[in-house]
Amino acid sequence: QVQLVESGGGLVQPGGSLRLSCAFSGGFFSLYTMGWYRQAPGKQRELVARRTGGGSINYADFVKGRFTISRDNAKNTVSLQMNSLKPEDTAVYYCNARPITRAVDYWGQGTQVTVSS
Image 1 (tube, helix red, strand yellow):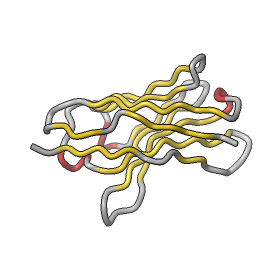
Image 2 (spheres, one colour; image 1 turned 90 degrees about the vertical axis):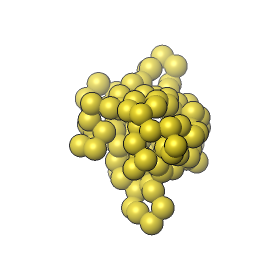
Image 3 (cartoon, one colour; image 1 turned 30 degrees about the horizontal axis):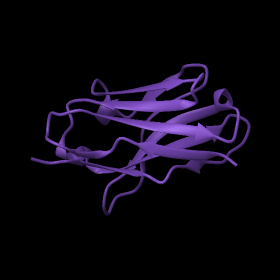
């Protein structure tokens, strides 16, 4: 069974930076597309960024140029470097894993990111 454990959330001032990490276990990491999603209060969960095992990357328009997704296939981890944070980035951020062979999603428990002065 795939398990995802996130870390790295917290409180940061506008313009600051945070780095989220997600540890993957229970499957062949390179066969999963790994992504980060977020959900703000009263809003639907939305894609932030995702990266395939082969290196293809998608970013949501609202984070382009500010966030960077990376993955380490040797360590089975995926990270999200978030720079120039804005109050509207405040949300619970979730790590996601989706195997390339099946239409199923695995989720981490979520980590809170709060951007406030």
